[in-house]
Length: 273
Length: 273
Image 1 (spheres, rainbow over the protein chains, first blue to last red):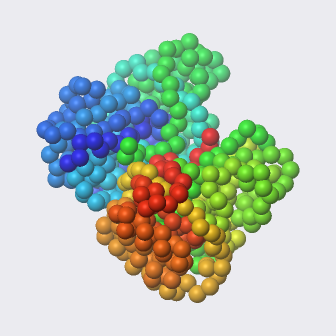
Image 2 (cartoon, each protein chain N blue to C red):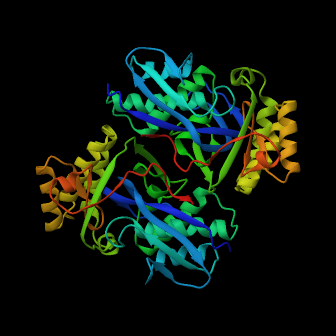
Image 3 (cartoon, each protein chain N blue to C red):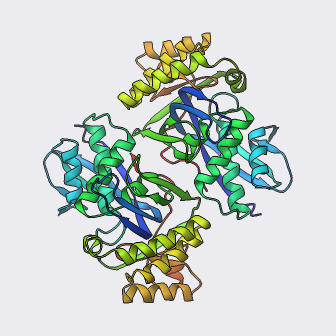
């Protein structure tokens, strides 16, 4: 094992999605769209076991599953710009980052598609995500046209750049939402994707995401108020799926008077450092 | 038109390839593998017509075809870290960069896949390239598993990072090679891809590329000598297809006593700046 190997995986906020379960975890996944962020997660390995994020021990089944799939015992040590459980794809980033560093440090000789497939399958089986991994592997503003990992999934992207602001007001459990009735959500996600494919621009992402959050019944009162305030100030914001988090283009949140962190759309997908 | 819009497209050196002609330019293309470079081409638009690269007027049918496809009259102004005609994918970079900046500056509202398809088709029809555009859109160390633009083509990648050195000793005409008998070349490219898919590592890319260059009869005496010198010094080098250019991992060329430029593997694909 080479301890100096590190990988960076961009954060990813999903604006809208539809859930597509399948017995085969590499075919299961989501359609939808979101934004990959220059704020993300840096993953490394040490001797030992367990997972530490910013010095705190965490339990993450998706990461355990990646280590099992690659037949490795190691301790995963990560630094994250973004909080866990708030809709930034941190669990997906940890799963994908672990796959990348294990492959390099233990000479597993797998391709990027193979590593993405392992990390995506691990996330799906753990119930912690359906689409972050494939989006984080790509970077930019990914559109998930077809669910699943390579070669089943299909991606496109919005050619866009610029600053992204975000503010988190609490956690939401992805597992709780995804294990409930997702019929209404998936119908709303399908309509959102149709509108985005017809006009693939960043403005459509934001508009379709706001409508999706409303139609799918996922807006919390706090998120509703913040998004409304950003709109009133002339900005573009929506809710990160699934977290009590608002993301905005440009200076949308600060213009509306909120304390917000900021980064940018990440041109790069996940990569070794 | 917004004159401040700019796009960066990484350079791309192909190590080996097989040619796959098709009447449909979006299905035509190549299989193969190469390396996307942090040295590349920055593209912008001005009022007027013509194409300037580093202040020199150039004629590039692929760029003209992209402008036609997007129904735009504009002057394309580019700065390139890399020379034209030497195997760095500069014509592909100009075609793809033009598609990205025109889409943004003229609000064409096309997705990344659509822009890649336009630029790839323009390159194929111009006869100036078969696989650079799809690789440059992706970044990293792309493997072209199936020829063509989205949705026909299929890509994978080698998870790799690091310094790349390169030195150019002259030009080769892509058009002249691709318009000749490509049977031997394509058979050698197929064997190289099989070996890479079996063991998708950077070392295999370099080894398979050297064997391909020899088997396809594309090695010039100068390139042969330089690659041999790098190997003798313990390094990994091969020939950039198609140029009289040698690229090497790490400090391969300088270790062998050559003057070389250097950059790194580009984690990012083509993107707006």
